[in-house]
Image (cartoon, rainbow, N blue to C red; front, side, top):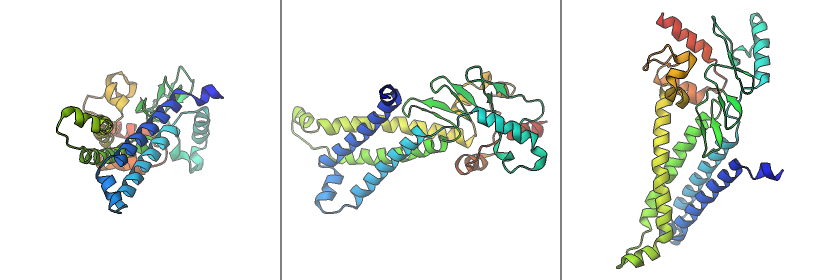
Length: 274
């Protein structure tokens, strides 16, 4: 029980929560805009800031704890049943992976399940993940088909909080005649400011890169390993068989909640090229 409780993921999540609330506490304790608003009896700004922090934490835990889209033997069994009942017009057919032409699903050598197109086995999670993007050590979970949109929303919310926290921290620095006095007075606020700056840069780069990849309907894994992936080897560096246009890609990513049959889009694009 205890080894499972004190796992790497548990420690990382506790550290993330503790760091977030420690920085937030520093912003409230020093003479920042938040503290001055409280003294004036104006609580709208502090309440909104706390709500944003809480929402970012909620999105973090949702992304970190939810199933990213694990491929299971149940999925394979359902796929076989759906293919056998295809002529019966099963309502769930569009939700299940189907094969077309001569495409054969690859069987994972680790967990022995058939991998739908765009899935990959994660060595850290020991699972195959649908539309695998990457394994994120900060959330200690894979980013895949089910939680990728929550991951992007978390990055956007976190960036908004960090930019506001940057302004708040900057407003709290006190001016002193001597450098030693300034450092002594602002030590904790300076540490919080440095943490905010580092995380702002990292989160901004991650958000921009993921929005770019999402708008092109590609994943980090496909972008980095384009020439080693079987279904992309024949494509040029600028070709993407899953690209449906920027608006179509964004709609599929943010608004389509069902399991997408990537084989259909792939072969449809292939036929159009022919």
